[in-house]
Amino acid sequence: MGKPPPVVERYRSFLFDMDGVIYIHTHPISDAATFINRLRDMDRKVLFLTNNSKYTRGQYEAKLAGMGIECSEGEIMTSSTATASFLEDNYELREKTAYMIGGDGLREELSKTGLRLVEKEEGKQAEYVVVGWDTELTYDKLKIACLALHAGAEFIGTNSDATFPSPEGLWPGAGSIIASLEKAAGREALVVGKPNIYMMQAALSQVGGKADSTLMIGDRLETDILGGWRVGLDTCLVLTGVANREDVEDYQPRPDLVVDSLLELL
Image (cartoon, rainbow, N blue to C red; front, side):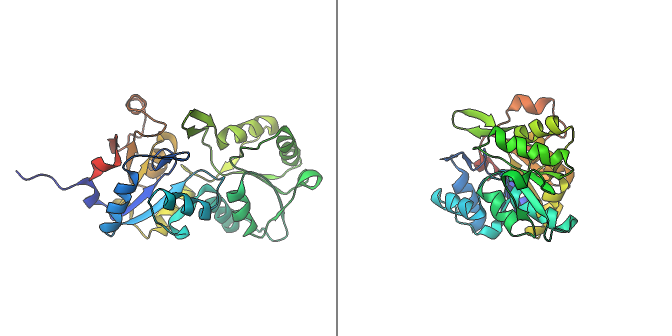
């Protein structure tokens, strides 16, 4: 019998998480650039899909280029991008105010909507509180957001990742910040990022793919794998980030594929 065809030949489109799959913080993951460039050679569609809301798409484009992966901003979707689109699709934002906890990426995307971003005293009466990953978080930021939420602001979160993978281990993620405000405000945030079906459907639509010919590749079971499964995608867990083989044993839904390196898919 002949050798079976490589896994990649089953799919026309590939959705990639970034942190833990392409790199760990600023450290490239071995083989990722080689694999993605091989997909380019095979004329496959690629979308980089990250829950990290801190950075702009332009910053991600430059970061990937520095790791040998050329892409356009249109091939990058962050949870900030998805959150801004979700707000525009579901709310009347013109002349409304928002208090934001997050980084440059979230600020840039929200500034493209009709929302007016406010701070300090004005933030306490904001009509929306939008929360992402903020490595410069202060108690004062949490206080202002909490006051706005108790005053009735809409509560939107970019993503619920409890941790962020770094070379020295796991740091607190956006989900940890959101959880502290949920506890203080006695309310749950509406979270847009993976595994929320809105972001996954938007990603699938952006690559123009069909669910049965698109593969979701990630390192987290509770976001990448669950999110892909929710929209009917085959999923691949790569063991270069957060999850390990032991985690897979008791998790449902199980990923369709588990690999140590992306090159195994070739």
